[in-house]
Length: 456
Length: 159
Image (cartoon, rainbow over all chains, first blue to last red; front, side, top):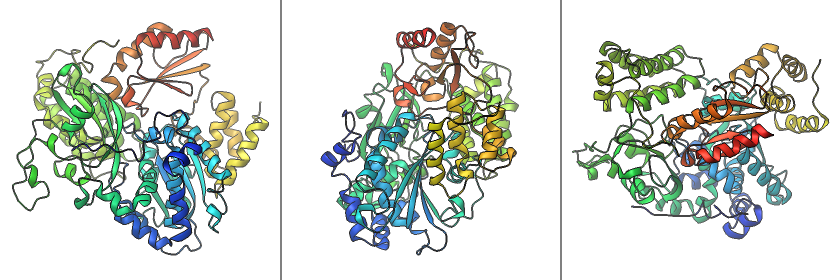
């Protein structure tokens, strides 16, 4: 069921919505951080955070409170750091940018609570370089908060220093991977690190570090403001440990592309038709990418198979996957991922091989090149799509696509490899006929389309 | 000629160095400052950053070549990046790019002969809900139509 909320987005589309004056006036700005820092202990903060069932909004969906609890209980010789991932660049994802531009103070207030909860005194917000307005709004918000004494040596008059800095990327998708981001903050090439050690033990500058997505941290003041359990209960999936409200994005062939704030748990059908107004030209949905290009596509014809009454998905057994509430675990259950919760809608009439080709160009360009299977594999996948589309491929080559994709998965340092291989396999498996039509020479080269109508 | 930061950027660098526990961490921000001033990362800049932060030259060159937004060669006065990734492509990014190429009379990846505009594609710029879009210098232009693009480009060409 669609349940619209405006905890994070109340300031949106107001001319002064990004300022401290508006944040304090309309959203009780910084009152929550003040209460948390002046009346709660670090342990209480982490225990409370766990109750929010706030699953990481960056894509992996790890519970935020649990992540905070991995940090060393006492701060030793090495300082602790909070790193905020605002390197939004997953194709199809356009939500964090709206928060930075239109509600930057929620991000800063979240950093204050987050730093206190993990014992850190410094937060770095890593923003991709292209987002100049986002960076300017965050810098402005930090300066305003510093002038009021919320950020600085004695946050809210308490003997606890918190500094928040914006660190700009320089054009590399891979820096959204947390260990790559740490390298980038340290001034290195953004190549992912082996895990373990995990960032909570050895992160930025070799010190204990928590990396949270920007939307995750921006939701923290809301969660603590109403009580984390109450926040979790807003979600239709509260009982399944997937709580709160979050931003949903809609893009692609949908009538009304947008970013909206909803209680966790709408279905794809509700999002596309109730929020998005349906598909352009009232066409049928060919498939959707549920949460950024690394999440395998879903087709409306797919049904849930969960005959076991004990299965969490049993209530939807036999129904379309488009009628399952979008949640971290429900999407995993239907063979994809919730990812960033920004849905790309692809209408009937679009060529799925061309879609995959476009995405493989992306992955080839963005592979950091450190691991051979990913560096070479992403290029092979792209070339194969190109050959298929130009009528120069064969069935034998098409079959090799599976081997290439499977050769990447599990053989790389970071999850970029899976992020490339999983959507590739999904496209080929779910649109086998289209791929075969090219391989057999039944579809004319150069006929592939991505747009439904001429651009105007 | 050796490179030197302008006094204003020099002040900014002092601020930046205070944010991190190591000097190396200033590599990316300092390169941004230098490129802002010079337009691209020249050999003189690599040399300057190497000495200023006391780093091996290989480190600085490694960073410059890893990240796509450091220009390794001189570029035009204005930068146009057309987002080419799927969500934009579904809404006409292909035609948008062709339109830009035709209007500017250059192919993607090159600079107009008068040095005013460099045209390139970008990977997803987090503006999928307002596709198709392009970035011009520091600004995003969204929900683009041919008329809007013509307006933007003629302003750049006439600048």
